[in-house]
Length: 163
Image 1 (cartoon, rainbow, N blue to C red):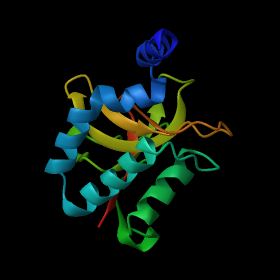
Image 2: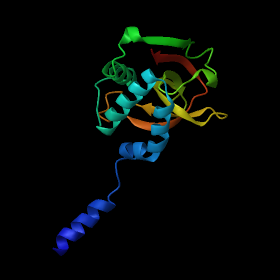
Image 3: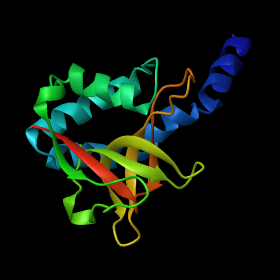
Image 4: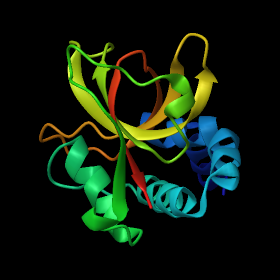
């Protein structure tokens, strides 16, 4: 009996994985963003959230993950519109006012070697500093589920939206 109680207490004190923690940490923020999003954006955001919660891994890169999420939500490639198109290193970069919850963003990832990256925009955590919560998938052959993370979005060069 004592061993069972100790084992249960130990399990309760073990930390959750960082990826699961990322969802729990931002859960209320994510749910509010979904509630305020357009219907197509909300459907894609809910699909992505379910994929994160279920630790879905998609073989491929960040682009493959978001393509799968949009498709699973019923927004095939023909049902996505490009609302901003610039170039990686020369822009023009999107103004914050153009970015909406549920948008698929391509941006320079300043936190990882300044390479291009894509993720789903959830909402601004500090719009003035261009910091926003993104559902991000590492890709690069890693077998890791997606996570929610705050990124510097000062160089968003492409925006795609479910329609």
